[in-house]
Picture 1 (spheres, rainbow, N blue to C red):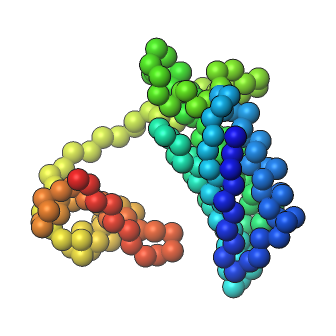
Picture 2: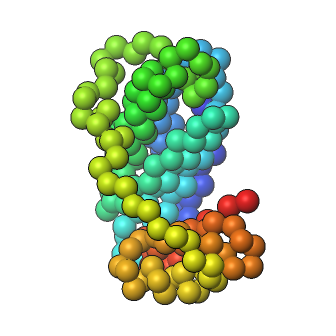
Length: 184
């Protein structure tokens, strides 16, 4: 059972919008096993250029489903979000069925059989590693890591933090700003 937390930024969440969001996202409940309860956090944003952004996050114990979509029409974005969430669930089910048949884990959240959701071979191939790189992690600060990332033209850069000696990752966000992932 999904519990909804719907927020609007630069938009009022009307009862009609709330009902549309709940009705559409509730469709993914058919993929869950009986008795599973989760919170669906939905964030609706409207920008100055009238473009909308819909974000949905459904955290559970062993898996977090998350999708984000930008579109000129908020209702179309919500429809696309549901498609993305369903694809994520099918990918997880494929992975669980292939690798963890005997063990309980992520698979306890998803129903065993759902008619018409047999994953295609294309989806299974999405996990195939096609290239491997090896490199030494040079100690540096996050500013130097961002400079290295930009010099290489990459969207992320893995490095060893000079102060903490932990492996960290800097990455370029869609809004053009930078993010940092710190490890322990």
